[in-house]
Image 1: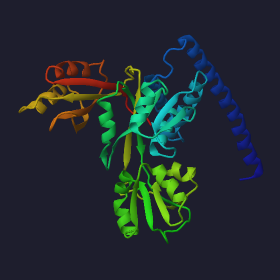
Image 2: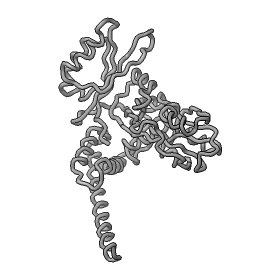
Image 3: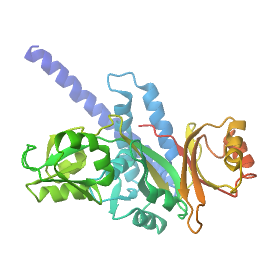
Image 4: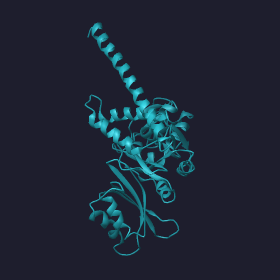
Length: 356
């Protein structure tokens, strides 16, 4: 390609960039005016954001993949929303964790993120109004449910108003680019479990030390020439570590699901989920009675998890995720029938299914 041809394409890109910038600022001005009309009401509308991102994916004709196009627009919406006031988001820290990555994926880089030391602290900050929303892990496709988050959901008044699904890629991180001389590997217990087979095959004699988070593991590895950490991309960047081995998770489709918690209900977006908490009588057929109303009304169940109830021996609470919104049929009728059979039924929240 000649220099003249290159110049033509570069000039065209410069002109397009100017148009994009003008349109983004026009969009931002409309968003600012909407904020003025709302007059300090609810700033963030998860159902509206989900509808916009679904529409972008439907309109996209490439060559950008649908997911990348949606992520670009999420960042634009994040920046526009920050003109009213940047959202305050608490997450399970420290900085460099997968939960931070999930928070950024959902709210964009314009949100102000606050790392917390525990899931309970994340909840308290949001309940007290110090943060607008909380992001906490709830389940991993390899390791299962996060028990502390499920316990939290039985106690907190916060509502589930969103979900984030994050592909988890684990890397072996170290100050030096070699496997030689590694004496210990730091990581969160779940990540050690997710990379169990790789560690057995490549570092069978190395001590494995569980940490409170992958980010803490990366911090410790950054201080020790004989140590390595299993963590993600953001931890590698934050602590300036080399990726000695990439994507070492045993399950290639390793995915973690996070919940977004807040004070507000989310109206229906057109493609939603509802999370339920319930208890049943300790008698024969009790579980059948709980699930029958869902089948009767044609409601699909995507998750069923039991957890020991606090204050009772061998008593359990059940966490159920279903497709649909609690204010919309057929879920509305299913919940009405379900209340006749459950000892306790609580709608934890209805929210848009993850778009990206």
